Image (tube, rainbow, N blue to C red; front, side, top):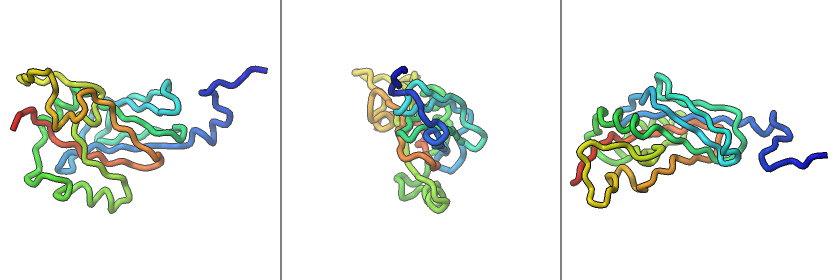
Length: 168
């Protein structure tokens, strides 16, 4: 009789029944489409899901174990895309048009910068920092670690701040 390893599944039909959705939108509520993503479950890091956001900025993956999941969006693609999106007139989460709609529909809401959901650091044209650090506002952690969520079985609406690489 062989011993079970920590990643062996005894009753997969009941354990791998969790799903997750992410919707990426800009500050105007417009979907962020065709963004490459990776999803990784803390319970089984070898189970990595890959794809691109659809025409509604949606990601949906199923059959996850009940562990936290980390989302990684392609850094360069996201930076290039978010440079083209307009900023909201009023700053701050309280001015969001996305948050009330997401919460009214029963979804989790989060305002994020590109560095909070990226899989790394993008190349930023004409960005010169003496310490070779990315823009602090957009990259609070100089080594992005993705966006981890728990619990599963819900949609997370991520309002992504447009990207501007400047120093105020």
